[in-house]
Image (cartoon, rainbow, N blue to C red; front, side):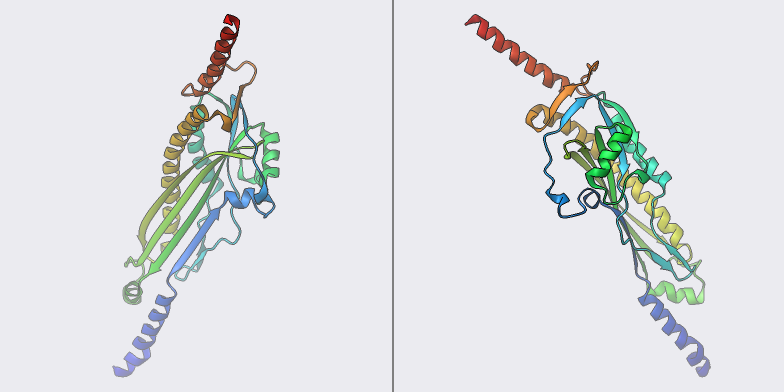
Length: 290
């Protein structure tokens, strides 16, 4: 019996401890507006000009390309690797949720959801100008994300795995943290108009065997919650942006395209124009009286 203990149990314990030390994993996936628009030190020297917003606007929405050097994990139990890539279908669905906020604005004439393949990694404003020509857009909303998934299999779960089986014991603790960000740029002036972030934190648990499936589910859930949070912030930022144009008219020049008489969703743009017409008339009447 003692010899059996030495032959089987001790090596089994050593294997368990070794596996315990290797059971912590991190999967990191991100895309960055900074890496896309300002890939070199020269690009960071770009000085934006005062934007000229001609209403109604034509707006594009797109995910910026993924960053280089993404990490992935390998599942010892299944022999399969895992990375939290977002599919094009998932990207399209998330972009539609962002797009719905722009569609409600009267001063937005056209909205284009732009496929990821049209955005070149580190393409900067040269790439944006190509997209502007291709789609005829004035403004673009660039969506980026940063998601980290951390997995920790504790020693207790691995010990039980050697006795009962991995399907029966939940031993993996999974944390999925996601940040999403929408940055809106006027392409011609290279000026950032506003941004809206969103974040989420998802905590999960799984067996070692179904770890990859659980991580994929948590990843998508993390993106959906972060996107919802981002969309709510986007609504607030759109309102603030319109109000800031009224309070600080020097930050952007506003004009109407031929045939457009709309006021925007809250009327700020047209009130802005009427204000200056009113001031001009008052000055003219004052001069005539003199």
